[in-house]
Amino acid sequence: MGRNILRIYYRLPVFCQNIAISCYGLMIYIGRYTGVYHRYLKLFSRNKHRKLEKELRIQNKRFLRLLHYAARKSPFYREYYRDIPIQKIKSVGDINRLPVLSKDILKENINRIYTISKGGSLHFSTGGTGGIPLVVRKRPRDVQQRMAYLDAYKLNFGFRNNKMRSARFFGKKIVEEDPKRPIFWRTNYPLRQRLYSTYHLTEKNLPYYIRDLNHYKPQAIDGFVSAIYTIAKYMEENHIAPTFTPKAVFTTSETVLPYHRETIEKVFCCPLSDQYASNEGAPFIIQCSKGSYHEAIDTGIFEHIQTENGIKLLVTGFDTFGTPLIRYDIGDIVLLEEGMTCSCGSIHPVIKGIAGREAEYLETGKGRFSQVQLSVLISQLSGMVEQLQFRQKKDGSLEILCILSEPLKKEMNEKIIKSIMERFLGSKTAFKLCFTDTIERAPSGKYQLIVKE
Image 1: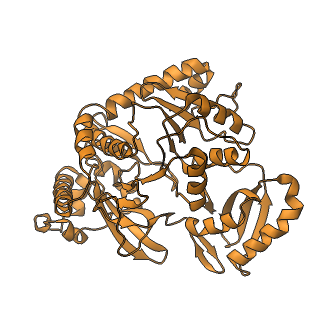
Image 2: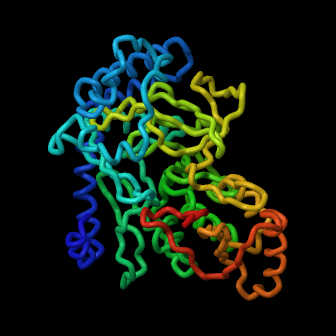
């Protein structure tokens, strides 16, 4: 929403805000859940991905279709591939003949990469963590196909999107900064969603969120794992049981750490399933009902590139015809484990997990630490620390923001916390421990464990 529209929206009573959000939700429904959506939902729901030859055939066909379309329709790709004999690229195995598309190249050439007009497309904005948000254009049929794939995945857990109630924790500013009444959610009736603000998740406000969740009784919870974990952790510590049992908790956009999963699954008595994609249009990495992360090769191509920070992903998204992404360096790091298979029966490749952004690493005297590695430190501080944020300065030193579980025990716990951190980070790592009541979220609404200057 633009600032002027937001000002008008915030002046409306909550009832009218729900109507405004529902009108917007109806527009989303028409764009994403009509057209070819139902046909693809049936198709994807039937496909259990058990035949390797079939899946590779689908992948090759969709890759070649996207490649030739981009080379023909996009002014940028026509020039980018000028010296490459496209007709000699016969399969996914030939993809390394094509140049890599970096984020900088994408941003600088976005208007020449588009293959469709602004008026004939649906628009999606990236989070803008690297600067100005990027707007990608998508054909409605591609968005409908993508939504059908996502909803077919959720059907495996017994949840039918748009037919069952869901609670969504996401980064849109649907509630004014200081509301007159403690109502931190709005309802999107056409999509059967209750949208919960992630910007107001303070200790003071959490009882209101929990009371409303118990009243609304969603059949699924989805969104940022840090927000859902904040709710679950408070319920666990205060011995509050939910009066509903969701089919599943679906997370995306943030790295799921072991302590997140343990607490959320324990409190809500349901599986947590994580899903990786991006607003740009990265192919899906989906966590199946057995807990394995599968690279969905019928939605794109995943290339694993070894770097000093770990295994970097290059992605090619098969539903990016409006803004083609071919060999796109998305900046994410994955964890691999050779020979992993899954008992769910899918032949889609299995990876160990997603470590997060390439930039989301701490530089310390003991080397680099990822978010996943830092989760070990956080688990050691369980009971004393509610939340941490590591802020790395330009000189390499760390400022560590810390919310204590029991502020009255600060003097007693401070020495213990510092001692554990020194052992974990190494004696050569200079850090300053700063105790606080709140840690601000990023403009996208996400919680950042690591912030680097």
